[in-house]
Amino acid sequence: MITLSTALLLACSLLVGACGASQAGINSRLRLALHSPIQAAFISFLTGTLLLGVTALLMSSPWFAPGTPATLPWWAWLGGLLGAFNVTMAVYLAPKLGALTLALSIICGQVLASVVLDHNGWLGYPRIELSLERLLGAVLIVAGVLLVARANPLEAAAGSRHGALPNKSPGRYFLLACSIAVGCSLASQAGINAELRTALSSPVQAAFFSFLLGTLALALVTATTGRDWFRPGALAATPWWAWLGGFLGAFIVTMSVFLAPRLGALTLAIAIICGKVFASLVLDQQGWLGYPRVPLTTPRAIGTVLMVLGVLLVAAN
Image (cartoon, rainbow, N blue to C red; front, top):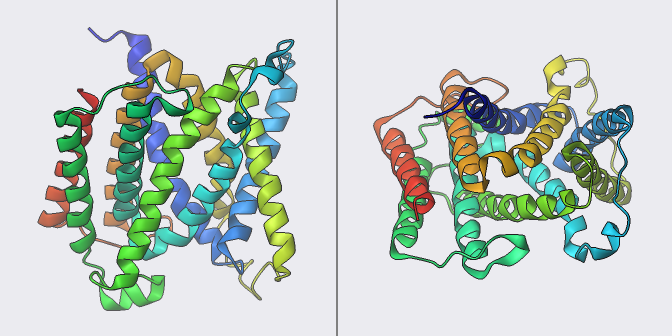
């Protein structure tokens, strides 16, 4: 029987998944006022870093235990770089693919990368042999993503406004590959940030260091491009909620670090995936947060079910 505390943790995990789907749309709306997705990612990371930094200082907890930084592997500090890549790519991809296609293709990458990481025991993950059931689950996930991607009924006018590509164009499949790469990066980032957490006093501190490094990397890239920031007249037309992506990102990373040891990686991943999928369905159906409006069709529903079945099959073994 599920206890009340476990139910609350699962509810938080569902909320993390919903925030992940929402964050991409929010940051993409901010990007409309800027000249590049890197600038939007930088603003998102900067706000998240400031929030986490102030919170960590107010907690007045010690940062590192004596000697722990020296025992950390070098890759434990790279979570912020992967996070910067993830947010930048999500800003670019969200209006072109829609919420559900983006979410499912990212999930596809997460699951495929997780299977490889588990099989080899990389990045601190426990070693889990690749079984026939896990392989079949991965195939179902890929099939579900491809079915949803091919059945994306964006109208021509809406697609041109949002920059979406035709369903069967080579460019669209390239964008799907980029989304899968983001999912692979997310699976790796979770293990990296969890390793960093072992040397710190709180999940907030781990999230802060991850965001800080990502912010510095994005600041360096934006400084070298030499481009202007805001488009003429676009700033005034930007809604207030377009500035909240960094706050959602800070919440997502902090809660993921907090929830992982309490629920386990597998339960946490499934809950986040469910929250992301259902939130994406709503966002696409309603056209909220800057996403192009995409009605739920039978092929998209079947593809989503295949993906969920694949995730459960991989998780069960």
